[in-house]
Amino acid sequence: MPLVRLDLHDTVALVTIDRPKVNALNLAVLQELDAVISEIAANEAIRAVVLTGAGRFFVAGADIAAMKEFTAIEAETFAGMGQEVLNRLAGLAAPVIAAVNGMALGGGCELAMACDIVLAGEKAVFGQPEVKLGVIPGFGGTQRLVRRVGVTKALDLCLTGRTVGADEAVAMGLAARKVEGDVVEAAMQAAREIAGMGPVAIRLCKRAIHENADADLATGLAAERTLFGLCFATADQTEGMAAFLEKRAADFTGR
Image (cartoon, rainbow, N blue to C red; front, side, top):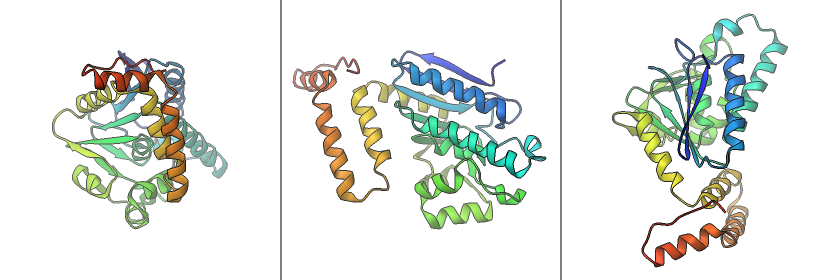
């Protein structure tokens, strides 16, 4: 049985981490996730992605039993692989929505933060508790967390190892919103809505935000107007504006 499943629902891809009992990340899971990411990247028909965990967990963390006897070199290599896979996930052209249905701790929190949008289910729990094990986050937690919630809150979570539920995660900006009911279905609905927008515009909007999040305002504005201009060289812009003026649904082709 695969540890990472890819199910296609028209233009939306559903990726499920399924490693009983808690979907812990190990070398095999990372390798399968990397292969799934490559498959998504090669499929231009995919316009949005939902990532979740099977059962009651999102991803409870990395596999501690597998890491316990690592040497310093082995640990650095493992962290490098995890960072590379999560960077490839974050770099997908299609937006990725994390449907956090349970614990997202350590590597699970880092995995969620590599997604564009994080939706928190009622039982979602987030945290970077690595210091309780005598280590620090290794898959990007110290870097992605500070970019999402700021230095003060990132230090609070990483230095205390405390966990937060859905409400606090939303309040601090770690998650976009809390979902009452089925968070995976809510994420799929959001993904379907995104998939119905102009695909080129979605890709360029994601690019404009991510590539300039740390830039000064003038640099970010310059990048925005360049990408805005590029939209007007696409068939999607022609179709989208024509459909609006003609009061009909747009038929976007991603060109």
